Amino acid sequence: NISSNGIRQGGFGKVNIDLGAPGADIITTNGTNSFASFGGTSTATPHVAGAVALIYSYPCERWGQFIQAHPAEAALKVKKWILDNTVPLATLKNLTVSNGSLNFDGILSDLDYFCAGNRLEPLSLNITPTLTNDLINYKYDVPKFGEFELHIYNMLGQKILTEKLSSDKATLQEGSINVRFLPAGVYVLMIQQGSEYFVQKFVRY
Image: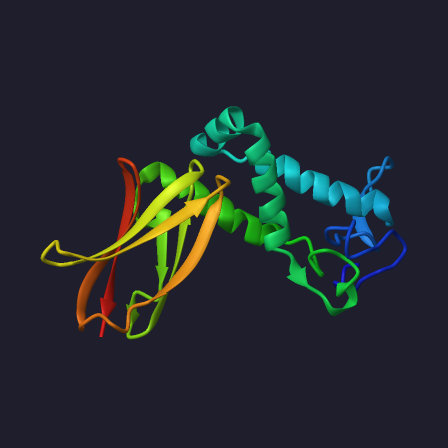
């Protein structure tokens, strides 16, 4: 409902129901030039369907090209974005696959990240933190599935580390690596597939 409390007026189940969505006390326009409230799955379902429609219509050239070239993978990516960004709710725990409710703000962040790949800037490879003495976490967007390599270079251009990565789907990938073995200094982390690569600097202190 509007207070983000789970309502069991509709179906639920941690196998077949993916997420919750607003479905009680929802304000909308009506046919008398005013507003009214209604609820049930008649409102929850359109919220999710509307989110899907907004994702597919997002103004991003790279996303539009990806939808046309890989329609099945695009559909899976949409589902992943929706489920990965749900807001956890105690009232939906063990009642849905995601244990949470629809959150379009998080989905927009993933869309922006995906579309940033058009510019081939560091947003295509995101490292956190960039100043560390231990673990760094990385996210990189996969335009096509297959084998990848992760490289770390020092500022002399010497390759310090290579790791093999792989993905069976074109989607956002995440991982972490311990850099404690590196001497203090500035390094470059590279994700590479063939002639395509993304890089970002980090500092080991």
